[in-house]
Image (cartoon, rainbow, N blue to C red):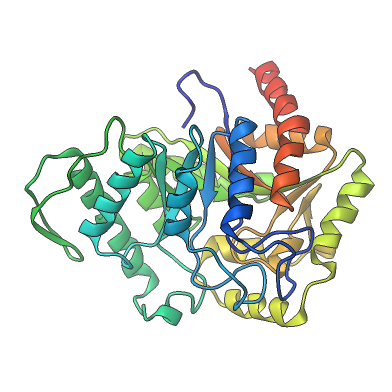
Length: 367
């Protein structure tokens, strides 16, 4: 989704697990306090980023599982109140909040933030993540439930009550969501790499997201997604989620990347490995593919997958190298980049100064 005039959109990330120049240690150098996360989001807003992705977790996914973790919805609500322009892309797992209540919560936050809320639906999950909080549905059921969840929310956000819905997972009778979200209701972002995820996106996503992979793998992923959108008579908007490690010299960038994981706690690494072993998540399995020195393609490094759940791949290099790589994904049709770097305050500024202006120039020159 572009901003209406065809400009590519650049977003940043809220590190609810904690932050620092080292990942995978037992505790974060910078715990995810509200004051620190406020500093991250206000930095991104001041620098002109479009939106902020805030993930959803049931245990810490970057440091030890029992390390402090900022709860997603509460944190997003508080951060929306201390910002004015930047949007929030809030990750949500259907099934953990009653549908009608969630629709009302999202509508209220959309109103409080003056229309700055979008929803990233997360149907799947890392192994044992759902189970730890008492959720035992299988992967297939979660996708079916997510589709019904999206359809029901759209109905509640656009139709005056009473709303009726009879589904396999949700039933609404004389339901109201008032006031309705003003203007454009929250948009739905959907990620995933499996055929089931692609099909769901084709029917329901406003924006389809993929974690970064080697270019030809990403090309195949997006081609599959486009086919699903085509079946539904819809035009896809495509996004890429990636970390960046950028320095003026390539050697310094690689040193910074390796420094991220060189001090990781063996217990954290073992837990992350166990979490993805045998996972049904196609995208998660792709993130942890083995490669010499974690280099899966030129300047594409998946070392973070040793310590981080979900997106574990970064582009590493100079601003020129990083923007050349990002440009190749733009040429695949990607019009939204969700970026991050460690620590998130300093790297937010570095990327805004050294990467985004140069990439915009290259995208414009490429037509």
